[in-house]
Length: 233
Ligand code: BTN
Image (cartoon, rainbow, N blue to C red):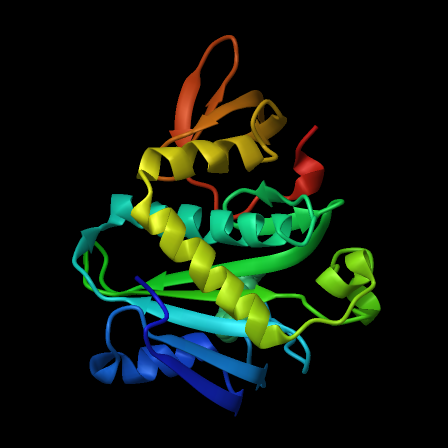
């Protein structure tokens, strides 16, 4: 269960970094939310610009897991976002592994970070949801907010509440159900991809997060950090 304790901050470098710096004193499931971040991070060391009006938060899961189980948090978090958006009548899809898109534009990004290489004792999941932003400047063709879609303003706190509710609901339900919903919402299944110079079709995603690609000659399970949407057809 997440969200029993919520730490609210005005401005911080990054909510993921805050949790990583304080993880010893934070209880399992604690959420850290900030109105702004001055060094918000995305995957692959990208910057996550974090201006006022959107939702920036992270939570900590403190339990011993093995690397193969990490993907579960991506699935639960992605589906919690997909489900909360549905309640605002927004149909979103997942671009593997954990970008949430609406009409090919990113509405939410998820950054999962963990300790250790084999045995992991805590995981930090950081989520940025574009809520009220109206202009993404140079990223206008790539990003979108809930407000841009529904033409309404939102209380950022309410969106966090929605996320907590959806996440906890999914956590209580059978994982397989959530995983199947993740597969259904995934944009990449059935798409063509070039991998190591060869053409493949993406035929599935394994529970540990590897994607299954196949062509006439080979079938492989591979981990991709991110897929450039242009690589897919
Ligand atoms: C991505 O799409 O590359 C992941 C973006 C993750 C952004 C969130 S905002 C809250 C948390 N704090 C960070 O510095 N990053 C994550």
